[in-house]
Image 1: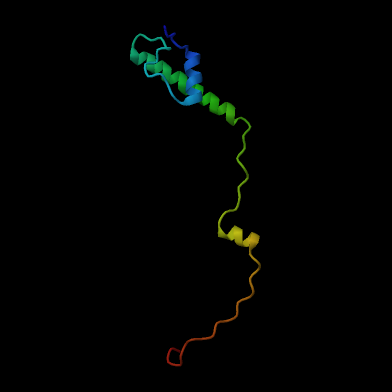
Image 2: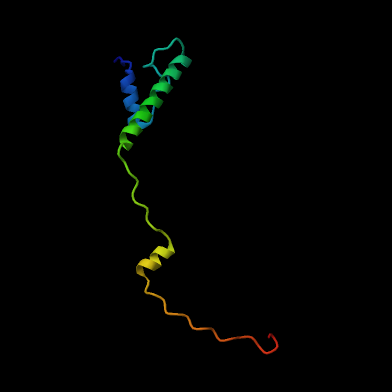
Length: 95
């Protein structure tokens, strides 16, 4: 059984789908391994940026929510009663 060399488009699609690449970058034709790796790196990076831009087109972040205990209290807790003045604990000698 002979294995066919994948095309650049096949490798890019695989990278976008799985995040995995073929370690020898056989689909890219370069004069050396280093040149093939550099070509592959540039093509894969450009494809990833394009895919992220395509997916993000028109995307808006969800509206900000108020988080934390203040939001919970404002939403769910009944209003507080006015506080009464605490009895003085100072003694005659503290004054």
